[in-house]
Image (cartoon, rainbow, N blue to C red):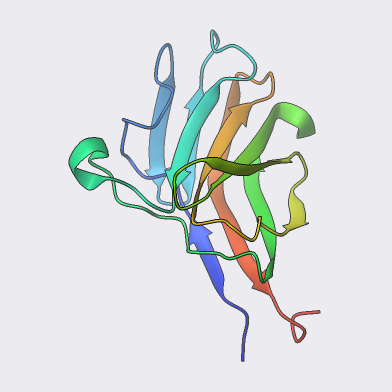
Length: 148
């Protein structure tokens, strides 16, 4: 059985995007240019969710359901002027929506496991001190024995 692979794009929902002082150009689904001269380092630029309250947030979940049993590969496809320009933060929640763990990804690829009690999670694109970048996609792939 082939490993599952999910590609996450930057959708045009603005409720979960840092827009103060930003210029965002949606050239294509896999080509979003973002520029912001005044955004502080550490700011959350964009968020994606595995579970949402549509009535409240008006967005649909785009992240795949993952579990603590499997190992996953996170692949970040973002062009930045400097390698440490951005990072990805995964925040895992249990079924009571209490934080169950956090993971920071600074590399272009990283293997990870989520906590066993993970019920949902969110993924955040964090500013690491850059002012512009081009976002293509983030890929989450389940790693099975055949993948290696």
